[in-house]
Image 1 (tube, one colour):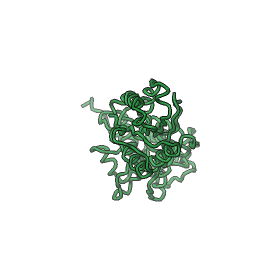
Image 2 (image 1 turned 135 degrees about the vertical axis):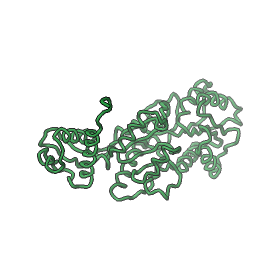
Image 3 (image 1 turned 180 degrees about the vertical axis):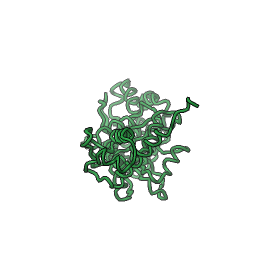
Image 4 (image 1 turned 120 degrees about the vertical axis):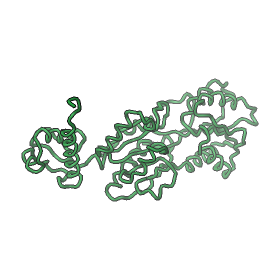
Length: 351
């Protein structure tokens, strides 16, 4: 029996932390005002000085109190449960350019809003997932940004928890869930802009290289047909996600087609394919690649310098993260959940 730890002090500390935190959130201790002194709290909470010191220390660590002097502890103007959010990634995939740019963008959010990133949360054994669960429980985080479609028991359960607002990068209809805010990508506008730019440059026959069966393939083909841009079936190709490097071989083959069959333009619907496509294109003799216009979807900011000329069009990662945080903060203020629309921009338009 002597080896069994005494859990009572631990539970008293947890209960005190939760009580004080709820008093801060409810406004009993208003934002921007001094927090009561130890002497005052000892009279009201009925606990020991050591338990009180521990609880206040934890509230300082989690952002619910500020200051380090015993008599100069303040309630912050902006509480973590209303201003700190989690950016969630499904796996640890390190070569996904979109996720990398989103993670980089999370470091440039504007005060008082802030973002913490969590990777590989689809793995039940993942440490980051457990940290996220504890942060949500302790209200260190006030909402989640799903960069993927949440599926499965754990992610689905989190989505169904109406107390936690979520931004989800998805076109799925969440009308019956008042805690979900959709972030929608205007791919129709992106592909239409790409097709119009091909026509402006005199392209009459274009190819599409897509990552898997993504939406950009069908929407570009539809936009091209409306504008009279030819996209024959033999120029529509899908590259499996696990074999991205095949884009290099494919581009080399397309460039070696007879002039009457060769594409005058190539639309790449996923930036993860562009570097492979360029690697194949640089191996082609200049006379064969001359006149082939390249337009690729991308996400910004993009610092990668291309070896050959190409136009990039896509979405601003910093704006997506910032708009998501602002939407979550607005949900806490008013309960509103207007969809967020990510609109495409050409690379030279990004500021």
